[in-house]
Image (cartoon, rainbow, N blue to C red; front, side, top):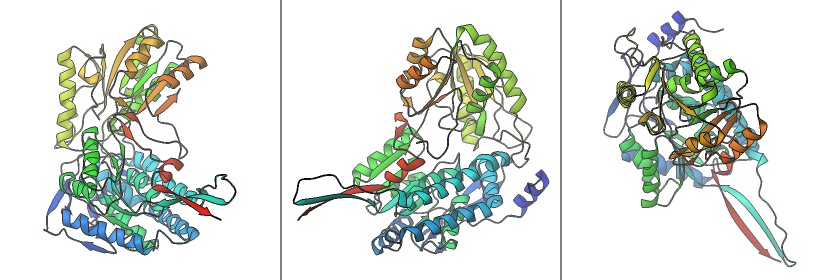
Length: 497
């Protein structure tokens, strides 16, 4: 049964979340007693005061995780037993779905409807898919000369430090943690400060599912302290990070300064949606493009914020986009199941997004939708869905990641110019192509410099799809079998007979 708005509000008013660090099977305050406040961006109210891990706390978790790895309590556990624990873990996430929905909604403003349709089922599916993959990945036995036997095995790395963003708290934690655990590694998870609570619950449920203590630890805290300590630790053998390109660069620096740990980083994006003149169903196209930029308040790394439209259909598309947006997206209370757009994550980010909007106006772009702060909620962080027309490729809003509900319409004169504009970016995460010409579609897909391409759709996919980018959008892949392999290393064994 789906909760009503009043029922969600009652749950929010009464809920008392766990706020301490999880190290081993125990919950702790931070070593220095420091805490940080989590603020509900829809109301400005304090959600909780959360323990802020020190560098010593992170190191304690990392040392314990490495010790448990060496003991083999998880890394050498029979495969079917490890699979069954992760299956039970997935079931528990599903059974506690309302709590996870509530936590992410009140911490970062994500509408409960989106948590129900995307984040919660996505997290559950991730753990089930990676659990099932555990005994499907094998080594190999290459042919060699007589007198020798050669085989290659895949083994876990050791301890994986997972640093997750605030925009998809539960689902991004699943994308990072599930393949690391499935591969046999221990994990230390550092969630984003703005959305830590669902990660603490995740760690608790792993223990309930039968996971050995110390294999999955959760250390909320600031990026400058806890995140840096995790990336610098000699006891961490890989960092799996999703966040900004600037912080991503630091991950590689910290790895180089410490033990040359492996780094997987999914970073920023400025993804183009290319609408050719033979787009076909304009209403369907406009609706998908709208979803691709305004979904999750535009706080999506792969948001299709550069909308490259053929001159021949530019005006028609603009009208269809405005109509589709007006029909579906309006800011509202994220605890209301009817709401499709919540607030931005915090006041600082709201100010940043507003700065991009004001700057675009100053550069000569034309607002055709939104552009204002929604004032219906006091002390909130809302920004109305916004679309600019008459944007040139050199404008700031066409080049920098905004991470908010701001789209930029850019004209193009055909496939060659569209490709040139699309690739003229430091980012290379994703792209969308809209055309009825199969040759043009596949040619563009081949030539676009990015990790993911959707043709006549956007943000589609399942667990078979690798998620990640090229260029300054990062390295490594989340989801799919690739993510499992990236949490393992190969070993070659040569036997003289």
